[in-house]
Image (cartoon, rainbow, N blue to C red):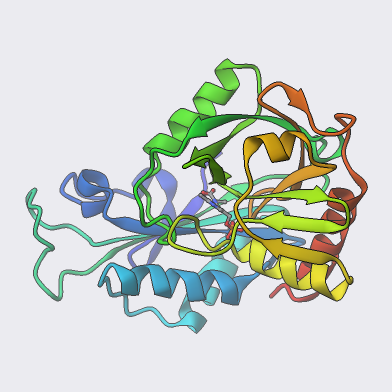
Length: 286
Ligand code: PDD
């Protein structure tokens, strides 16, 4: 099935979208990205994703002339043209075609490469995995140390997902200095007593858009939140565990490194937070 994609100001069939072999994203991983979810044909958390995109570009001294209105119009156009009811919009901005391989940034005025495309995911909201929970393994966090910038340097997360699958599990949690940082492509949480525990924001983790909203909704629902690092042992002894991301919302985790979390079943808090998150973010979808 051929999609209509967006490349540098134009809409075209995916087979026609071509970028240079000298593109900084391809040669240097010099690109930032966002993944935004679509439910009922509407975009969730648009402002949050745009704020983080602008921040990622600012941190890397990257520029792009598109305004938020233009970004939103592109999202809407792609969703409409590809008839997306449930799915994702992938957006990537690279530092553009440098004309040759060079460690220096290309001269000012070099246009960025801007790519957006949709991914249809028919069961995004009613994901059967959310009914049974997923199983994770832990791995040392070998990623670079500016994980707060959403760059496309995804080789290690990709290796981690392959290692988890090879171990017969669904995902991996990264560990650094004895504490969990985050999942391979998500933010992670445990529940102990009436407390939701999740690592505090820093350059060690990506500042999840889903995380920010979830913590707001949890606080509104009178749930107690503690932002601090936790260990794999704590996760294994917790009442519940879960992760959040734009591509999975709130996903229960029922096993960590072969040890069942509580009774190994999806917990009440994760289930409720998934419902609240979907309900609240759909209300605000654009
Ligand atoms: N990943 N941490 C990492 C390392 C991530 O890659 C992601 C998202 C998150 C959650 O952020 P958000 O709630 O804004 O989606 C945390 C996206 C979904 C991906 O790479 O496909």
